[in-house]
Length: 409
Image 1 (cartoon, helix red, strand yellow):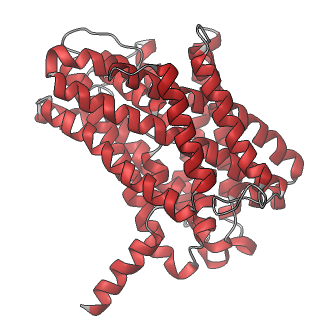
Image 2 (cartoon, helix red, strand yellow; image 1 turned 90 degrees about the horizontal axis):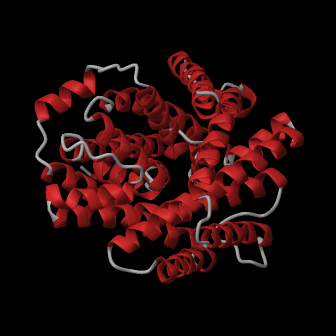
């Protein structure tokens, strides 16, 4: 019994990075994607969640393992093993993409606040200042606790899905039996679901947070469980978002383009409480995304350049880290507040850049994870390599298709 409690204590000592990274992948952009998928095609796209969950677990476990074994961030390892030039251009692309993603999250925060009756011109500055103070004045432990607490609010999507009273037999059938359509929008949403589930910033943030938390090799098993739980939970939430919109909005023929539109559209059909839950959950997810994505950007940029980095550092100890985080928050906030700003265009372009960079990030991560000089006895298994290479191949194909849809079709 004592040994059992020791294992539980060990898990909770490393618990956090995997859960937080995976759950905050369901940010404003992700929730919008799942909401639109459910409203447009009902349960037809549920099947995409199972293979993406497997791929996400494999990729995130590999990244977490590198963080545990090396005690370094991913951009640090890429710089050391593949050179400064490769790292610089990758960081530049990720900065642009993450600025767009942060803007999307603050736009989601603004939209959810307006649904709840607050002006975005008041709430965007309030939200931005709050998250800035949390990161720049708090410690890693404080930030992690706040993020873990906020992750609980994602349960609201599960409550909303259950309240919608779907046909569960049909739901689970569509979860395991694909309903393939040749509709261009169906293909585009399939690409979007996979693209919003596995993103470049996740890989850098997860490994950096594990390194900063100081998780060691002896804690590897608990860290792996943290990652598996996080990846599973995030796609369970994605499942309920699709189910809610598929059950309520799809039969009514309601087309939406944003997650905030889904929250408003739910009210006449599912009641004000369901709509409120959806809006509050969107506000929570948007603000969490606005914390983590700039934080990930600051982490990997500083690691790549050899600068001091970490939430536990002060402005004096890590000026570049703090100013990168601050600048992204300020620029994204201003963009959201500018009347008529091309936010949709910026979000689409950030998705394109993310899609272009992700195969390279995963390629370098896979090379590092199989390097015995770096990983020792913790290199990838053959099965992991097969799944990882298959994931990269699929992402490359989907990225090409996405570019064709955006720029040609």
